Amino acid sequence: MQQIEQFSTFQIQPQKRLAFWNSLCDSTLSGTRIDSASAGFRAEMLRWNVGPLVLLRPRSDASRVQRKQNCAQSSQRLILHFLNRGVGGIKHQGGEAVLHTGNFVISSPYIGYDLSLSQDHELLVVEMPLEPLRHRLAGLEEVLEKPIPSAISAKILQEFLLSMWRHGEYAESLPGWAEEVTEVFFDLLAMAMRYSDGSAATLSQDTQRQSLRRAKTFVANNFTDPSLNTQSIAEYLHVSVRTVQHLFSLESTTPSAYILESRLSRAADRLKTEPTLSVTQIAYDMGFQDSAYFSRCFRRQFGVAPRDWRKGA
Image 1 (cartoon, one colour):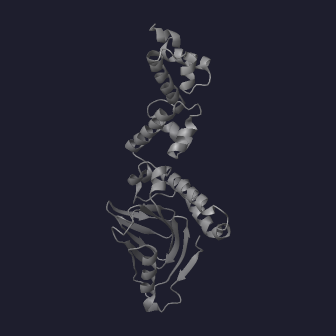
Image 2: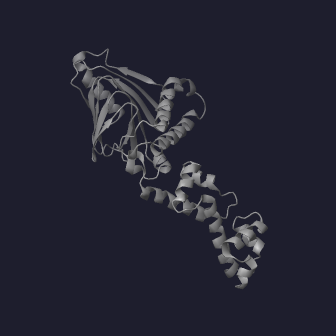
Image 3: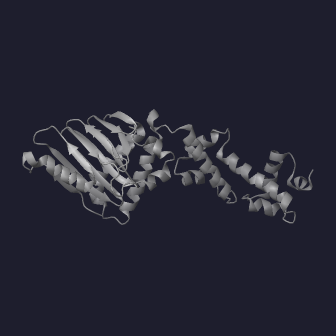
């Protein structure tokens, strides 16, 4: 892991500072350009590579930060700008939006972005691979380039990033630290986007339906596993148990009820199509661990006992 690097314009001749800063930023995030009306441009930045993450902590005079569209090899990358201090704005394909202290925005270097930042601002910046976040957050494209308000979940993410900057250099020698802290970062970022109090981060009904379809597919592929439960689905979707419960509530059911219904429905089919198999064997094959419990659930669902169902009663 690379150690934390520090950069500053203070040792550079005033008339050469902006050019120096542009060269530094372009070498860090390809295609980046900084403009500022400030004479003797003042800026500082910390830079740190942690696993697949590029962490930056810049502060400077008022400036405009632009990144060119279609930067090489950037289609599978995202960048987080968290406004730790100051006021800003972002221009993107969908329009313009204001950023306040505690807000953050996720952008795509492939599309490009345009940030305006106030005097004495400070950013917490992370460039990251796209897939780990997409895997955790259904409908990610819906919240790209939209400011995420300062909610509790965003504050937790902010404190985590600040804690990394405060203490990370002491932990970086620990085996596996970079990999584990990267996983935590993506979990917290997804949580901050999913549970924001603002409408910008509220996933649409279509997105919730997409997540529900994924959950149902997971159940269909795994209902024979006796250990399948709500927690299993949550781990697969990388969401909380409460989120899974909410998804199934869209169809007036619960995850446990849906798993049970899936098992019983398949068991009912097999009772008819595989007459040589015992009721007990079918029960175990469908993920039940108790044949008596299976029979009670079956009778409750279909109004008859499994053996009577098989006979066509």
